[in-house]
Image (cartoon, rainbow over all chains, first blue to last red; front, side, top):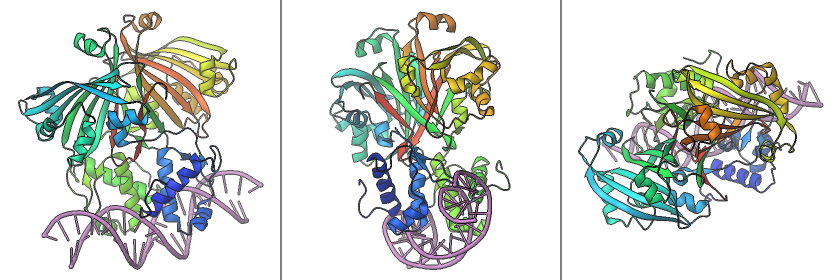
Length: 253
Length: 253
DNA sequence: CAGTGGTCTAGACCACTGA
DNA sequence: CAGTGGTCTAGACCACTGC
């Protein structure tokens, strides 16, 4: 199990349930034991059992209910916040070796657009980082990040060629808490095409990202442009997740 | 409030909390009343109160905890499963008028690729629908859907120019329960470019979708290609949502 | 230190499912 | 009908926060 012995009971239970599902002890398509049975097996009340099951439900690992015991669903992925927000961590999890070449690190004045998103004044100092990200040594993505100065100044002392900015900022006590990702497709500009080693006008998968701390203060505005074919985004959703985390947007709204 | 009088207490509570947040009674950045206070106000035990707060937390509407009362976050979107899965419903919510022109509706044998995704045998009958989707009369997306025959046969009696297939199938008792969306960027083919009124080779935002019923049986395999600039995908995530609904993927994994 | 949310228990009633 | 999950109560102890 991945949880510590001191972890809350419901967390240990959901890990144990997850283990049984992944090990095939509770195969996909089968019914779970009833809550009453699980209470007896683990010598606990219904509370923690239900809390653990609710977590599996929110993950999409189990489904069904009301009068019937839940059913195990198959082929469900899982990814943590940091995996989604850190290129480095994500690449490692995919079994690829992440790399980066810093093209530019600059302190400059915020553009009007960046200032609005980051909730600062136009002309306030920001730190721009432009990096080419690699997978197994091959160009995969062009990352353009703009940090508010208070956070970005920490990067001056950091070798941005050495690894994950996300992890470094975490070690410096910056707690990234939430992010909004906007995904679309764009044609590569001349400059982008040259760095990525492709043709101008060819399609790129673009992810724009606004990250914030717990109290909602913006920290970073980023634009990541992926070479197509190498990377895609996968989103799972179900009816149970009442209002989903995700939405499609259109201009003028 | 949107919930019925007979709805569970925790649902009515979360609606009431949401109302107070949207009305400005609990402004963004402010602290919520303590759970004990809410218990007194509504004359209930902590259970339903906590369940309602947990829902707001999962929506990203409130944040924080442990020793401190939660804080209201601002600017949080919300979208239901059906809005994300139905072009028609989504367009209406965006204030646009959805439209469609059916290019082709055909019964044919499943390709090897489609058969594998839909968990049927290659050569089994499937129903293909190719439609140009419009927003306010302008081409916006090219939709290629492949339905398993058992479901697709219902479409033969449906005017696919008239509206939402998703809604029609729901009215026919087909209960779509979950979907996996894979998003990437591709270059438009000659055929696609002609229908969409763009140039071959220009970028398209592609969403491939596999929808399933509650027991995990695949129903539809779709490929939607959006004209860029008109549409993008927005995803919000936070640390609290332990393993998110979303992930980035790469080839060979 | 007092107040907060996080966790857990024990027991109860209800609505829904399937035999 | 018995068994299931969905809901709610009342009370308890803990860890964390800020004063």
